[in-house]
Length: 183
Image (cartoon, rainbow, N blue to C red; front, top):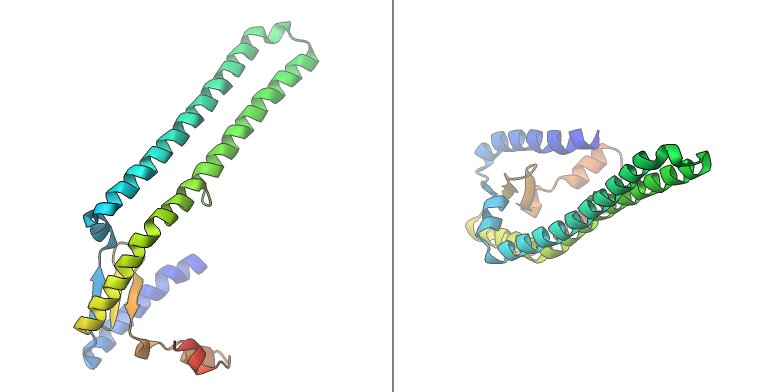
């Protein structure tokens, strides 16, 4: 449900806003953050750094794959010579190595893994520059809303006067201090 809301609400908001914008002479703009990133010289360095890290981790994963393949080949070649206990030990060793590989992949490339953590850290200063520049251009040129067309219609800028969060909360029966939300 939250994913549906994330895609439905911005589209609904934009369509309502577009109709209302004509009547109110509101200005709506967009940026293409992918295009902007490609034009920033520092971004290439970030990309190269991430590719190098990623390649190093892939090399380590490939080494684990080779170790697993070697263990499996040795096991298959000698399986009939092993006692049931030794067979069980060797199978357990192979399973442990496979679990180690899976943990490593998750640690490096999982949703909360090192790759995405490093990516966020390296991109944070560049993203901050984009947001600040977007806000400055929007304020200078009189835009009411600016969104990013590269993603899921993320708003980069919105004039505070159009924030109806308090009204929505009140409609839901939730009392809040208006000055807390309108910052």
